[in-house]
Image 1 (cartoon, rainbow, N blue to C red):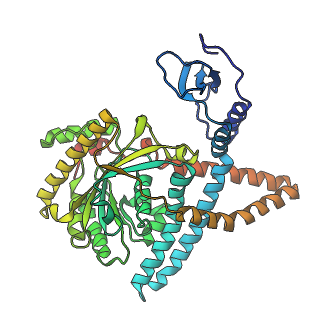
Image 2: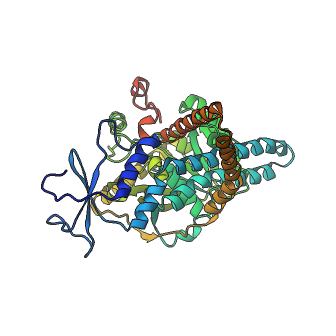
Image 3: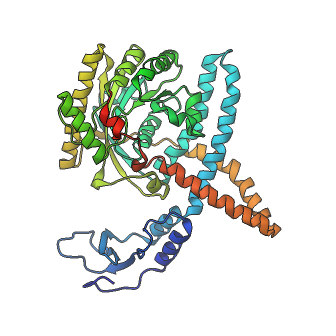
Length: 453
């Protein structure tokens, strides 16, 4: 009970929700905490302005009032409850894993086409790649309903998706890569889009294997090794038959306060201006990308992402159906304006990140980016693709479950519980890969001794 607030009986659905948290294995509250009770007040606290005629929903716990929101219609509560259930998460993950492994197998057989018709091999793998990556975009756009408003120049907007581009995106949020994929999907280039990724990801089943077959560029973050391999991989993309966005996180790792502190020490040692909202960009990877793809890529898209109301989006939140509100500033810079010389290119990138930092500072003050706000239409193909795989894979899965339950065998049921548990841990591990605190070892002793661009 919250002192000073009239108590009302919590809705029955809250008890069901609390029970589901205990059995799902994805609890939102640490052990030892009491699940919050909900109280509905007819009159909000002074100074709080809400919609007329709408009661206030307070979230209370043993530590006091945790939040304030308007009461939602019961139908929305039921939908939110459904989206939070682990059974739904398991269905999504089953469809993703089963379809991903099937697609990876098909991709393996397409290697026979490489010596015969390389361009046909590439076009087929673009479509197969889309079948995997679009499932994650579907979760963001259709299941979560996350909104992303693009702030850009209306004169540049018609060119998006009609040309190859290098996308420079800040690396601060757990789902920033997913927002980059959503941008590519909205402009119809998701299947062929590329990313500069760490080599370890190439060994991750489904996503990493998919990237291998679509000629993704992998790096070890050791310039002596990457100078040759990254350049060769980029040169292979010069005759790629599909339009693509080449996504690059120049910061090299996700932003955290610890990493930022170490990065700014490096900036001070090099005589570079400090950044408040970004890490110091690593310039050599960007410079070699520009040099290798010049005359193939038309522009650099300077993209700066942020979320309203200080939202901290996570992949687990997306899986739970939580809706986020993103703002993405996109500035098109013709590639001819980027210097060819490596040192001048590095100076150009540092200046770009100073401008990105100023944009983030302005966003923190005003809550918006400059430019005309636009919302590209949401395409139905991500949803259609998921429904196809779900209809293909879920029927035999549920039929197997029914037959197993009917068998009544203790050994069979115990085996199912074990598989269910392993699947749960696997799902949590896959989600954990995206978490910020599971990022790179940026800031270790080796990093402190030498921070190479």
